Length: 371
Image (tube, rainbow, N blue to C red; front, side, top):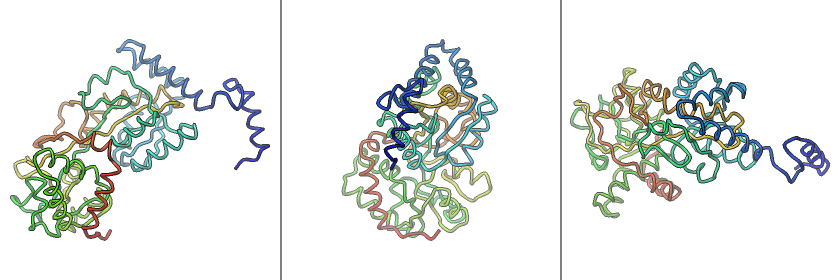
């Protein structure tokens, strides 16, 4: 805790500032918010074909740097920031963590009125939480028109989709033995062959919601989950799970992101998420991950530029990394052969804590897998 003299000294410094008139006056964060808002408004007021140039001008005047907070893994964020810097000349400083850590850090910095991030890119649930906390600034760029309605949210935009789907080792699960539905994971022949990821409550919520919406009773749903848990072991981390699958330590993953499976397959691993014909009848759930501007950003021009770039040039980089883009990109084959079902956004944003608790309870019926 600061001493009374330290507080007095701090007040004196603040009073002398050209931005702050007294300790009870405008805070640094508030001043930063006003400045960043002015920049965002100036860019938005430009003609659509001049917005990018206005953002580039602002980014240059800010020193050509950007602070990005993201849950993208290192093998994704590296190529993305490298391509962004090459295209714009803006140097990117990255804070990377899981989505919960990113949310916590931004929230804490906002409460302390010290924005460390200029822009954030992470999972939809955390983007929704940041929006509800009033931390995100509105983006009025014309590039939002490239998104369909499901990719546009009040304070953020979808940049990529993580596709939920089972994955299997093709040496251990032969053609014809792969699951044809989520219900198949409950079959007795998969006993001991399935791995569940300990944080996949959003997948659990989507499958549950899908089943209920397609005529199953709650009792039928509960019984299916009980059987799936009895067939399964639990592990932490989708990348770790794929390593188990590639090595043949497990035969099937109840759910992994299709891009992780596809990349492992391209590296020679005996893994798949589609059958031999290149198709799947298992409903796949596309979870949106997105980008948002931070209120009070120190580099609002660079933040706007990154947001706009992610919805334009960045979409091709996403395709090159075998991810699913949020817009239509020529040559994208990430959704080929898949049957997409609506992602249960409302169910998760309204009752995420409930789904977390239910999934934790389910995992008590699954064995723990050694790391």
